[in-house]
Amino acid sequence: MTGPVPVPTPATAPYWEGAQRGELTIQRCESCTQHYFYPRPFCPFCNSDDVVWTSVSGRARLVSYVINHRPIPPFDPTTPIIVALVELDEGPYLMSNVIGVAADPGSLPLDLELEVTFVERGDMKLPMFTPLQESAR
Image 1 (cartoon, rainbow, N blue to C red):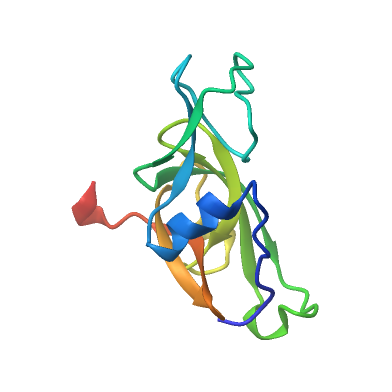
Image 2 (image 1 turned 90 degrees about the horizontal axis):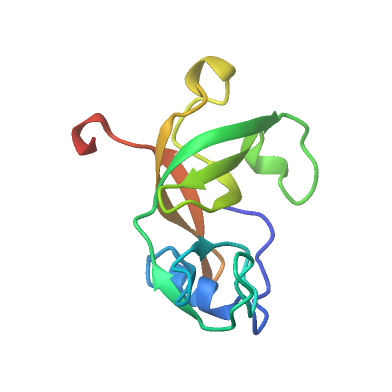
Protein backbone atom coordinates (compact mmCIF):
# COMPACT_ATOMS: atom_id res chain seq x y z
CA MET A 1 0.00 0.00 0.00
CA THR A 2 1.29 3.45 -0.86
CA GLY A 3 0.76 6.75 0.87
CA PRO A 4 2.21 8.80 3.69
CA VAL A 5 3.84 7.17 6.69
CA PRO A 6 3.24 8.54 10.19
CA VAL A 7 6.13 9.99 12.15
CA PRO A 8 5.94 8.69 15.73
CA THR A 9 6.43 11.19 18.54
CA PRO A 10 7.41 10.36 22.13
CA ALA A 11 3.70 10.45 23.02
CA THR A 12 2.62 8.13 20.19
CA ALA A 13 5.63 5.79 20.00
CA PRO A 14 4.02 3.01 22.14
CA TYR A 15 0.99 3.00 19.81
CA TRP A 16 3.18 2.53 16.72
CA GLU A 17 5.43 -0.01 18.46
CA GLY A 18 2.31 -2.06 19.24
CA ALA A 19 1.23 -1.84 15.61
CA GLN A 20 4.64 -3.16 14.54
CA ARG A 21 3.96 -6.22 16.73
CA GLY A 22 0.47 -6.61 15.25
CA GLU A 23 -1.25 -5.35 18.41
CA LEU A 24 -3.69 -2.48 18.79
CA THR A 25 -2.55 -0.66 21.92
CA ILE A 26 -4.24 2.26 23.64
CA GLN A 27 -3.98 3.86 27.04
CA ARG A 28 -5.91 2.86 30.15
CA CYS A 29 -6.17 4.73 33.42
CA GLU A 30 -5.18 2.67 36.45
CA SER A 31 -7.22 4.95 38.74
CA CYS A 32 -10.64 4.88 37.03
CA THR A 33 -9.99 1.92 34.62
CA GLN A 34 -11.20 3.84 31.54
CA HIS A 35 -9.56 3.22 28.16
CA TYR A 36 -8.95 6.27 25.99
CA PHE A 37 -7.48 7.39 22.70
CA TYR A 38 -5.65 9.72 21.51
CA PRO A 39 -2.43 9.36 23.54
CA ARG A 40 -1.82 11.83 26.36
CA PRO A 41 -0.01 11.75 29.71
CA PHE A 42 -3.17 12.03 31.84
CA CYS A 43 -6.62 10.47 31.95
CA PRO A 44 -9.31 12.63 30.29
CA PHE A 45 -11.92 11.16 32.66
CA CYS A 46 -10.33 11.68 36.10
CA ASN A 47 -7.11 13.62 35.33
CA SER A 48 -4.91 10.94 36.91
CA ASP A 49 -1.42 10.52 35.53
CA ASP A 50 -1.44 6.82 36.50
CA VAL A 51 -1.88 5.60 32.92
CA VAL A 52 -0.55 2.53 31.11
CA TRP A 53 -0.46 1.23 27.55
CA THR A 54 -2.47 -1.93 27.03
CA SER A 55 -3.36 -4.20 24.12
CA VAL A 56 -7.05 -4.30 23.25
CA SER A 57 -9.23 -6.75 21.33
CA GLY A 58 -9.14 -4.90 18.00
CA ARG A 59 -12.89 -5.31 17.59
CA ALA A 60 -14.95 -2.25 16.75
CA ARG A 61 -18.15 -1.01 15.17
CA LEU A 62 -18.55 1.46 12.33
CA VAL A 63 -19.91 4.78 13.62
CA SER A 64 -19.48 7.04 10.60
CA TYR A 65 -17.49 7.21 7.39
CA VAL A 66 -16.81 9.10 4.21
CA ILE A 67 -15.78 7.62 0.89
CA ASN A 68 -13.17 9.81 -0.76
CA HIS A 69 -13.19 9.38 -4.54
CA ARG A 70 -10.96 12.35 -5.27
CA PRO A 71 -7.44 11.28 -6.20
CA ILE A 72 -5.15 13.61 -4.31
CA PRO A 73 -1.45 13.10 -3.64
CA PRO A 74 -0.15 11.02 -1.96
CA PHE A 75 -3.24 8.78 -2.11
CA ASP A 76 -3.65 8.77 -5.92
CA PRO A 77 -3.35 5.01 -6.49
CA THR A 78 -5.56 4.04 -3.54
CA THR A 79 -8.80 5.93 -4.20
CA PRO A 80 -11.56 5.43 -3.42
CA ILE A 81 -10.59 5.33 0.24
CA ILE A 82 -12.95 4.76 3.17
CA VAL A 83 -12.12 7.06 6.08
CA ALA A 84 -14.02 5.88 9.14
CA LEU A 85 -14.80 6.69 12.73
CA VAL A 86 -14.89 3.43 14.68
CA GLU A 87 -15.80 2.71 18.28
CA LEU A 88 -13.59 0.08 19.86
CA ASP A 89 -15.26 -2.58 22.02
CA GLU A 90 -13.31 -1.07 24.91
CA GLY A 91 -15.04 2.30 24.39
CA PRO A 92 -12.71 4.79 22.69
CA TYR A 93 -13.32 6.13 19.19
CA LEU A 94 -10.60 6.41 16.60
CA MET A 95 -10.22 7.40 12.97
CA SER A 96 -8.91 4.81 10.56
CA ASN A 97 -9.56 3.29 7.16
CA VAL A 98 -11.90 0.43 6.36
CA ILE A 99 -10.50 -2.00 3.79
CA GLY A 100 -11.58 -5.32 2.34
CA VAL A 101 -15.08 -4.13 1.45
CA ALA A 102 -16.57 -2.31 -1.54
CA ALA A 103 -16.40 1.46 -1.23
CA ASP A 104 -20.14 2.01 -1.53
CA PRO A 105 -22.76 2.84 1.12
CA GLY A 106 -24.61 -0.44 0.56
CA SER A 107 -21.58 -2.33 1.86
CA LEU A 108 -21.05 -0.08 4.88
CA PRO A 109 -24.06 -0.16 7.20
CA LEU A 110 -23.61 1.78 10.41
CA ASP A 111 -22.81 -0.50 13.36
CA LEU A 112 -21.01 -2.89 10.99
CA GLU A 113 -18.79 -5.11 13.14
CA LEU A 114 -15.11 -4.65 12.34
CA GLU A 115 -11.76 -6.05 13.37
CA VAL A 116 -8.32 -4.53 13.18
CA THR A 117 -5.77 -5.63 10.62
CA PHE A 118 -2.31 -4.23 10.03
CA VAL A 119 -1.20 -3.02 6.61
CA GLU A 120 2.47 -2.57 5.78
CA ARG A 121 3.44 0.81 4.47
CA GLY A 122 7.16 1.35 4.12
CA ASP A 123 8.79 0.26 7.36
CA MET A 124 5.58 0.65 9.36
CA LYS A 125 2.38 -1.27 9.96
CA LEU A 126 -0.80 0.80 10.04
CA PRO A 127 -3.93 -0.32 11.89
CA MET A 128 -6.95 -0.46 9.60
CA PHE A 129 -10.27 -2.24 9.93
CA THR A 130 -12.04 -4.96 7.95
CA PRO A 131 -15.54 -6.38 8.36
CA LEU A 132 -15.62 -9.06 11.03
CA GLN A 133 -15.87 -12.50 9.47
CA GLU A 134 -19.20 -14.25 10.09
CA SER A 135 -17.40 -17.25 11.59
CA ALA A 136 -15.73 -15.04 14.22
CA ARG A 137 -18.98 -13.64 15.62
